[in-house]
Structure formats: C-alpha cells, structure tokens
Length: 219
Ligand code: ADP
Ligand code: MG
Image 1 (cartoon, protein in one colour):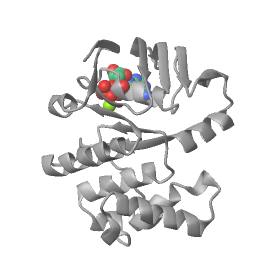
Image 2: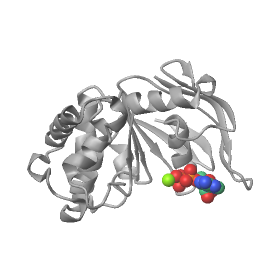
Image 3: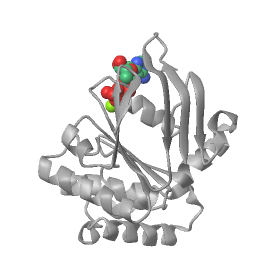
C-alpha cells in the first residue's frame, strides 16, 4: 500500500533528516515507528503521508509514484486515502466536536447534511456520541484526541497515520487512544503510529526502529 525506496530528506539549511530509508507497509498492517527525538520519525511520516516530498528516492502509494502526480492529484489522493492524527490534536477552537469532524470532509464533495451525519457516526465510533456539541475547551485531552481520530477516519481512509498520538496525554487517556487505534485496525484500517514510548511500540505487531535518519532494525 505504501512503499518508500531509498528516501532521503535534506531540509533547507542542510539537516539530513532521512539518510536513505526503504520501508514497505502492506494493507491491514498495524505498525509502530519508534526512536528518540530528532531521529526523523515525523519527517518520515510526512513523506509517507505526502505532506512533504523527499529530496531523493521514491514514494509509492497504491502503486502511484507520488513524484509523478500533480499537486491537485496528490491532494485528492491524500484527502481520500489518508487520515492524520497529531500530538497536539489540531482541532478548531470555538467549534463543536460535530463540526470539527464534519469540516474534515469539506473537500469530499458531500452535502453538508451528509457530512454531519458521517461526522456523528464517526464520533459515536470513538465513544463520543454524548459530546458532539462540546467545544474543544469543554473536553478532556483524551476526548480531544478522540475527536481528532474521528475526524481522521470520518472519510474512511485506507490508512491512518498518527504522529505521537498519546504524547500529550496522561497514561490512562493514552491507553484509551491506543485501544481505539487497535479497534480501527481490527476494522480493516491500516494504522501507522509514531511513538518514542517503547512500551507502546512493544505492544504493536510490527516495530520499525529509527535513529539518526535511518531505519536500524525491524521486529
Ligand atoms: P522526530 O520526529 O523523530 O523527533 P523529526 O523528523 O522531527 O524527528 O526531525 C529530524 C531532524 O530534522 C531533526 O534534527 C530536526 O531538527 C530536523 N528538522 C525537522 N523539521 C525540520 C525543518 N522543517 N527544517 C529543518 N530541519 C528540520
Ligand atoms: Mg516528531
């Protein structure tokens, strides 16, 4: 489903964040990408998710070579195939949970009433059916991250990419979010989770360890 071949990323200013990584993620996998801060995890996730282009090497998604797609095709691929979750939730403040999730479907071409119905279904799926009218400041950290997960999966993407999804949460809320990601995986979504927490990584079926912009080993 996703394949990186000899991917490098050198940021302007000369930092080599990825030194040549090759990785294949198949449909239906649940993968942890683990490594210390600064090892290139987020850079790799951004490249995997087509948010950023590599400096060299190839990225294939559903066999499409991302470098050959126009920006418009790439945006469409990303919007329909990939869901993102970030450490800091990235919810719109002053906007109730239902609309935070529904707005994630703005570019789906669906009517607003249908977007709201899908959003309500996604919120129920993450256990927040009773919090749809709450704004982010009226939710706990764990609940905010559940809203973010609902937004990421409302469009039924093939793959969910999560960058330190438990990094801003206490351990109980973090465990709840991990359980939710496992449920989504069990329901058929391919899930990639970045974490610097070895315990979280150890609980997942596949672990990719990174250091200094390279993949060290896989277990
Ligand atoms: P991780 O997610 O594992 O903490 P990152 O992928 O964020 O690592 O960063 C890898 C390296 O690239 C670090 O040295 C970081 O300082 C550098 N880096 C990350 N983003 C940028 C950027 N936009 N511009 C320049 N350097 C960056
Ligand atoms: Mg990071």
